[in-house]
Length: 149
Image (cartoon, rainbow, N blue to C red; front, side, top):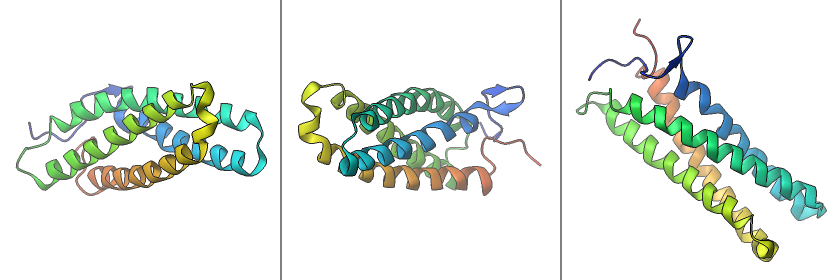
């Protein structure tokens, strides 16, 4: 249980680390287009945002599967384990909230709540930044998901 290398690999590269970049880019991309819609009112911005969120949720869900596999390999009494659990809970929550936001965006009456949805997206984005910081600590400081040197 103490091996820090990733279980899920694709051509020798850890899958979790490869996948997490997509939701980390797609969620802020969606937020950007939601904010742009507030100023411009072009409906195409809402479509871009909606599809960005759904792609981010889908890929984030796959990334979480491999993240859990990596989490289970960390020694339970280590500092890295407590950071990994916080990272997992934070990023599971982020993906879940964006799932809800994506579902709200499917409703025709969504525009009535657009400002609230955008605000929720911004708050969730800040949590994602924190979760990603923790993930970076796990990889760079504790070498989780990487080969031992």
